[in-house]
Image 1 (cartoon, rainbow, N blue to C red):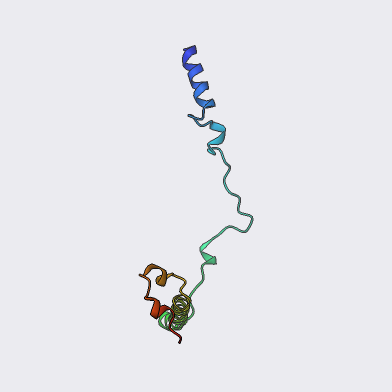
Image 2 (cartoon, rainbow, N blue to C red):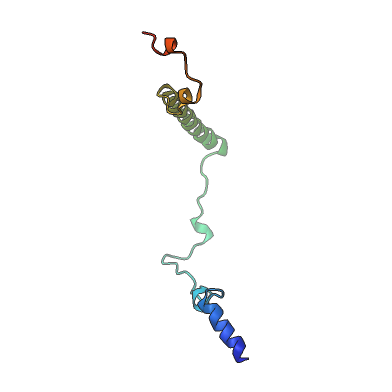
Length: 102
């Protein structure tokens, strides 16, 4: 029995078993500093669903179009600036084409 206890203590020291003080099992419940929550705090809709949905959908579609435009613009600028190094991955051009005066 004593050998078992020594083995258990050795296992704890080597990190094989987690100590119960680190298990976070005895935490108290979280404290709510405000009034108790009830169904009275749920918002009640005062406009028709279709009207609000249409208004929000227009706004979200505008966000989508602006973000797509910014994405396309940023990729176009990155390609124009050769940020992806596409010219470096191709075979070199001939000496005549590389040194041609524009």
